[in-house]
Each structure stands twice: as structure tokens, then as C-alpha cells.
Length: 306
Image (cartoon, rainbow, N blue to C red; front, side):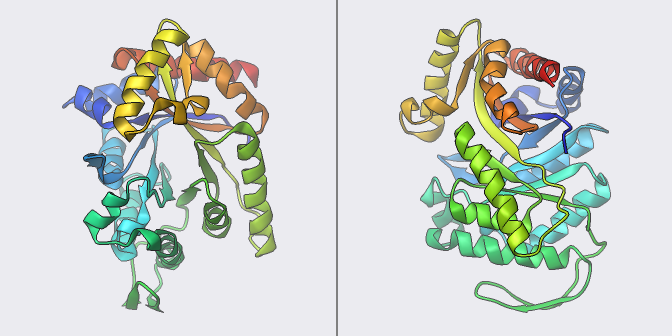
């Protein structure tokens, strides 16, 4: 698929700034030319968080046409039957507009401890949950005896056969997960070389297990900071990301784009040349207007290169 899709990931600060004006915010996003919005997901990451599927429901209800996705929903923290029902409900509300981006997270082990889920089990739980979701999406009764979940003739209806599932994560295990269960991979904190190698590997792994004819839609998700110049944007990035993740900005610097929309678009161009056509911008700026308008301008520039 060659269609360009640029989405803005709405952070907690954006929801707070919008207040009761979420519909107005999404109208501004659409007017800026963006294709959709994404919602993150955390229970108690570094003391904060928001539920990705609840956020997605609010976003779908607040605008009639923008695409909405989770990026990235921490599936191992939830029971797959509950998630399947939530996904079926979203499909009824807005058929065809929602993309389920999933991953295991794990940057903050305390988040898993808070939910009573062993951190070391997150990958295995994700695999079993995704396998069950694949069956539950058909609407058929599912009976299952597994390591983590037992089901007796459970059916989730109506069926949701057209749900697009994307799998995020940097590890080789995440690539295998995307090959088994996804229609795309979400690359976060990755170089252009790793993005190209990983997406090719996902498709090779899928073909090896007999998954052919997949409409692959790989995505890149990355932070970008808008300001009058790169130096000013970098100063903001250092403060925001240090506070968000609790580790020095230097750990993220090579993956973080700073400056004007032209600077940010220029930083994304190598990914475009590597075949990426879907970008989730985790954007920050001097205000909400700069974030929305900057992201829209990035898309406009990229379109001019295609």
C-alpha cells in the first residue's frame, strides 16, 4: 500500500489543553490535513497514564472521519476477552476507522507490578492474548486451555474480521509477533536501517509460516519538537523527555527530530525513501496550535516528495 498516512499522537497534555473542546481540536487536526490521531496507553507509567481504548472511543465519537489508532496498547496487562469486547464495541461505533496498535511496553516494571502481572511474562502473555483475539474476532465460540487464560465456549459478537492489528516493539520477539498476528509493524526508537531490515524480516517470517496476501502497513512512531529553530526545539526536548522517561535526553537524541516543520520533515525523508508510508508524530511545541499546524506542514512537505 503506497498511500501516505500521517497521524498525530495526542498526549495527556493535549487532552488537557482541549478540555471539553475535543471535537474542536480534532476539527483543527483535520483542517491541518492530517489523516488521523493516535492514543497512547499506560496504567501508571512514571506516575501517569491514560487508557488507550477509552481514549480511542472518545476520539472516534468526537470526529466523523479521522482515523484513530492505539499506539501502543499494552495488551499483556489485560484479559483478552475484555479487550475483544471493547474492540467489538469500537467496531460497532465506527466501522473501519480504528487500528489496534499493540505491544508489551515494559520500560517501567513498576507498571506491571501495579497490575499484578509479572514483568518477565509480558511477551508470552501478549502472544497468547493475540492468538485468542484472532479467534474471538471471528464471532465463533472459543474454548481454550493455556498458560495464562482458560476459556469455555466464549463468543464475542458481532464479529470484527476487518480490524487492522499492528504490533510494536524493538526486539526480534516483537518482529515475530508482528509476523504471526499483525498486518504491520510499528517501529519506535529505531534507525532507518533497522526499520528497513525489520519490516523485511517481518514479511519474510510471515511468508515462512504461510501468511501470504497480507496488506502490509508498517509504521514509524517518533518524537518531534517544533520551535523557531533546532536549538530551541532541542532545549525543550531535553526537558520534556527527561521528565517523561527519567533518563538523560542523550539516550533518545539520535531518534528525536527538532526544529521547524521543514527540519522534521527532512529528518523523516530517509524513512520515506526506505518505504515507510505511515508516520505517527509524537509532537511537542510552544503550544497546541504549533503542534497541530507543524504536524500538518510536515505532511504537506512529505506529500510533495511522493
